[in-house]
View 1 (spheres, one colour):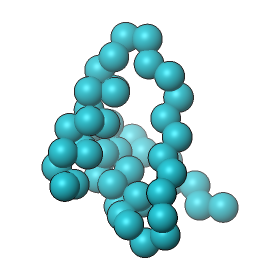
View 2 (cartoon, rainbow, N blue to C red):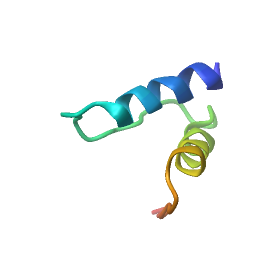
View 3 (spheres, rainbow, N blue to C red):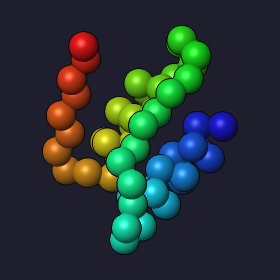
View 4 (cartoon, rainbow, N blue to C red):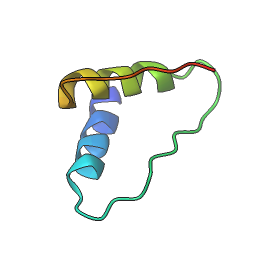
Length: 51
């Protein structure tokens, strides 16, 4: 499942006219992990802010 979601995020990243990304979901389903993996694999620098 996570690989599918990572591929969808990569497609979103490659779009020319993309909208801001809002990730919502139930507690403890891997949202933070998914975005951290996406950041590590697709970008050189990542800023993680938790509030």
